Image (cartoon, rainbow, N blue to C red):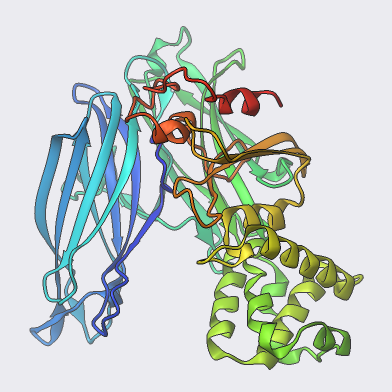
Amino acid sequence: MKILGLLLLALFIGYSAQSQDKKLKAYLDTKQFYAPGVGNYIEFQLQFVGYSIEYKGKDNGLIGEVAIRMKLKQNEQVVQEDAYRLTTPFMKDSIVEDFFDIKRFVLAPGEYKFEIELYDMNGREEPMKASQMLVIEELGDAISISDIEVAEVATVGDGTSPFYKSGYDIIPKLSTFYPSVLNSIPVYFEIYNSILLEDSIFGVRQTVVNAITGSTIEAHTKTSKHYSAEVVPFLREVDISELPTGTYILSYTLLSRSMNELATESYEFERSNDVRNFILASDIILNPEFQASISDDSIGYFLESLIPISQSTEIKNIIAISKTKSANKARKHIQLYWSATSPENPYEAWIRYKNQVSLVERSFSNNFQSGYETDRGRVYLQYGSPTNIIVKENNMNEYPFEIWQYNQIGKFSNKRFIFYNPDLVNNTHRLLHSDMIGELKNPGWQQELARRNTGNGNINNQNGDVQDQFGGNAIEYYNQY
């Protein structure tokens, strides 16, 4: 992604007040593009959850209204802002659907802080707020690719829609999860400055890689031919009907006629297409060994401990079962999970995992979280025991931190995770940065780690305002592997 930040790029905003009123919910995503004669610009794409809005009756239907305020800051100075009211589509017959909005800002390359405030004009909740750090890169001075945008709906446009782009009206899809009922990914991106090539023809290679194993899905490797222009729009539909459950990285690479790679952009998504998702827990006959391995007072705990190693659909099932407080359903789900993942010997696989859960509980739990809920606990359960651990708890110039190094994760070699404790209490180490695919990547992690003793710096300068002080040596430990 061209847009970098410390938060997930698909950010879920929610207000958690303990009120019985509806709580406005929305999804936010950011994409960077370039327009000749205009410059680099960023899109803020919003998807509002329809049922979370308060509506008023109008003409035998329903209508709602949301107030939106956006600000972009540099060094705490506002450089761009907008405030407006968004009226929902007219909802007929009480059928309420999600609705979308998009806002674009032209920005010079650099680092920005984005702030957003949303308010349901008909509701009684307080406005909800969120912020995100962004980095805008220069796309107009060399051959480059925009961010990849996935469409909920893409149609030929006439330029009158706010969602219009290069001949198409593109309603963005903000979720990166694809259940079995969705069998394609409509992909859109733009290629800039291919006219700088000596040849008028270039190629675009598509690949799909399993994010965990690193293996390439050969059936999805394709190359297409294109003609150079100042801007080349690219819209394709990727068939994922035969793609099994897993996490994948869809990549597009620009190729010169001599097959030199010129630029690459990627999109990570999660696919659920496994028969085990359709096995009913009600059909499972409880194994006495499973029953004896978990006491009734801990069944909810061990059910939820499966979350770190579960796919999105499984997590939803776990949460739903947990809410029922049914020990019988919880036991069946645990047995179902291990019967599907380790069919040769599910009970032994479960006991090994149970022992790991107990280990992370002893090692990483705190006053607020069980061990499996913490970042270190989740990483340990997902990837296993690290090969090497460096622990630094008493450094006057950096927050307490740990570096975990894995010689091997699947087909990936030498992967590192750095956790830190900015609160200085409660054993609450958070994941700060990792070079593992699919994990949090924070290019300013050293600066963040040293913020205990220094002010804000420039994320484009990896050392930022970090002073060369005695004891500030996390980068040396990180780079020794």
